[in-house]
Amino acid sequence: MPETPTPTVLDRLLEIGELFQHDMATAFDGTSLTPARVRVLWVLQHAGPMTQQSLATNLEVSARNVTALVDALEDGGHVHRTPHPTDRRATIVSLTDTAEERMRGMQRDHAELTADLLEAVAPADRDALARGVDAIAERLRALIEADRERRA
Image 1 (cartoon, rainbow, N blue to C red):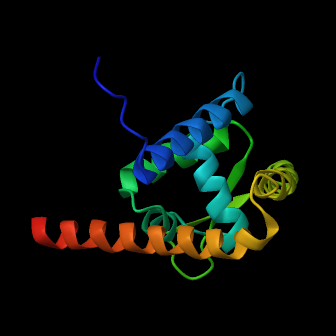
Image 2: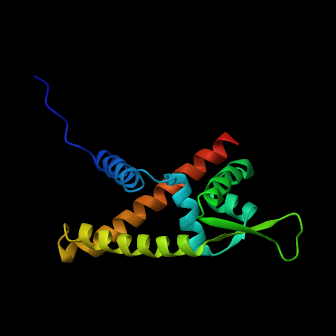
């Protein structure tokens, strides 16, 4: 019988990603929110109101894609559009009061989950874990950018 290989760090990171996706899908089951829509809300929560073009740039998606996301979020009462004060071709996308409240709740939940997850790591190892996760994320960003440039 072949020996089962030991999971690699990449295996564990992929598993964690899948677990987070499942958790998010479960959390928003029965609502109009999807991971992509929540990402829009998260960007607006952290960066503040912005044009749809800026939102598309922040999300690294097309203008058409962001229009569809904002349309759905507006229909669900999560965002509203207002005319840009100086550019009549642009609109500003902002969170509604209800969405701002929901995002504050999500931030509290996020902080609680962070604390809960870090309890699984010995206190003396937490700083090293944070540095390691940051280093992996930075390296992955660099690899993706290098691949993007190679393909261009």
